[in-house]
Image (cartoon, rainbow, N blue to C red; front, side):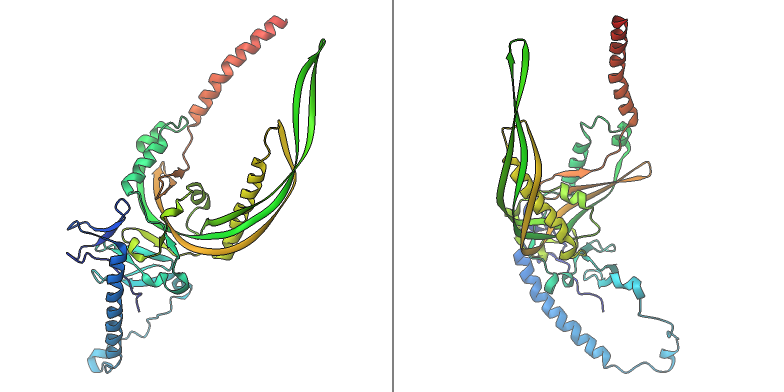
Length: 378
């Protein structure tokens, strides 16, 4: 049986609703009406209950029908199999409520759009029970904002090939709610440092350097709340880390009403698999905080440190990310933008002609200076 899905439609004209980050409401692109997400979610909760009851009654009635006989059973379908094997383990089917198309998507897909009618579709089953997120951070920036940010990202990059800016075109832009584990906890520890402070003074015809050596000890505790680690194997970890931070003051209690118009995945990386990254971030933050308290010295070298982690509550949240894929000279370039703050990261090609040109421009004067010095020495 296909998974139950939901198309959020305008109560006024039945047009598809999309969540707008600018207004924070679900908006209808046909009649222009807007609705609070909580209002639409409550309306659809009642509709889904009635639809589920009707579907169950229809299935029971169909099961009670007599099997076909005579010519109606002439075609041999004995070779059909409902067993997809290993290929079917990661797949899921759903039926679009708007046009009736039956579609297949990855098991981790939680929000998508129908390729036939274009209506945004939410798969509520992906968020039921233990899989339902605690929080969601709604999109604040639009697709147009993402394109503008990408163009701005190109500017001021001296080593970026000029043709890349002119010929590189965006192949795909996707607004995705990425699953994140958010870790609460505490880190306590200490560290020893060897530091020096030098003084220079003259004594007669001599210049004296006096260096003082210090053994420094620091200890402290840092409390963490909602340290984010992305829980999707599809997302590059370095991109997800680099577009932080998010403003958690805008976190909302999770509701599927924020999903229409965007893609969404449920987690496919477990808490246990993400714990090491969370531990490293917590320990690294404490180590940096302790080091930052050692000031006023010319040099400072850590000699030893210890960190003890107290792990607390783990939250499940969906965070807004714009993923932009571009292609140039047959090579793909992936960019990620924070859908709340607009921070964008991504890899860019390097013009080695400009690199060697700059190197030559710097090396030429140095070569002339070296020749002049050689002449004077001789």
